[in-house]
Image (cartoon, rainbow, N blue to C red; front, side):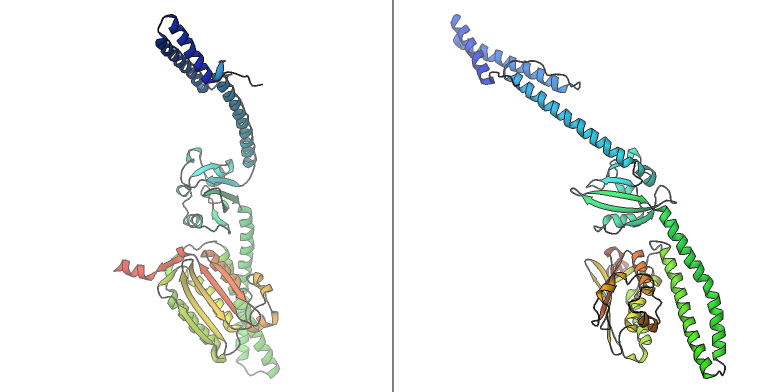
Length: 436
């Protein structure tokens, strides 16, 4: 229960009054008042020193007993101190519980402040990321220097995770996921996916080996079929041999696409980034599309930004772009329009193929990039497609940090667009001026 004590003002009046009465006894009331004020000031200084000495202690001792207003102040501070100590104990218990729970996780968790410096991490991060106690306060990008991680960290969109080898152990494969919180802070979660990567590698090796083994017998079959077709054969046998040759060619295309897809899946990122003359690349693809169109009369138009090129792997991008353009030729009726464009804006570079062909029902769009997924089995078979084209496109774009978007409606045509981030572009004007 709080004690009722006189206020500091009444204490001051008491000292002044006592000094005044003492001064009257010696016929010097003014000096008595001055003496009372000085004694009051000395008393306040003494109480202040006692308060400061108590506050500077770390033994959590009880406050000194004092009368009057100083006693009330010390009691109030003691109550606040006990409350703060109680809250501190609760917070310590919560932090200890949090550290115990995060230490039990198999994932590395790292908290990064607004200045991109390490603020806290769990014990698993020591193993997976090679962090040490002395790294606290150091910039994260000074410790994890892989250019692909730096590029991923600096972009603002963390919807897709990043897969890389561990900086502490190249045999460990990690999946990085970053989330923002607070005012510019980030939390980085690194998950060990080595087992999943090995399982996926086993699957890829099986597909690659099986596809590779199929090439030789297919080559032999095609060779004999061509030899037989060069002979004079009865019409029924000729027709059968021609269909066999057609299917053998299709199987060879399928095997080639399987091998290419297996190679693309073997790594998440390209290893040799080179400037690509995208203007000439698109022009060559457009010419190949006109040759494929032959006498079907497609109107193929180009719109190409002359000031920006791409940085990447040319053969992979040529394969991806060709797949999109050739699909437009295959699925657009004769005399249809196909528009190929390369545009650059603040969001990056955009390669698009737009046609006014048969289109795709929106319900099929989310699954178009799956292997062997077909909107219409008979239509796809007739076009000669393998069912792997868009899967190849998706993996090529993933390796270049790009994304595929599809807009289509049945009977209204389709637009396939590849969106590349700004850091994959190269300004030709800048290069020319630098060279000059």
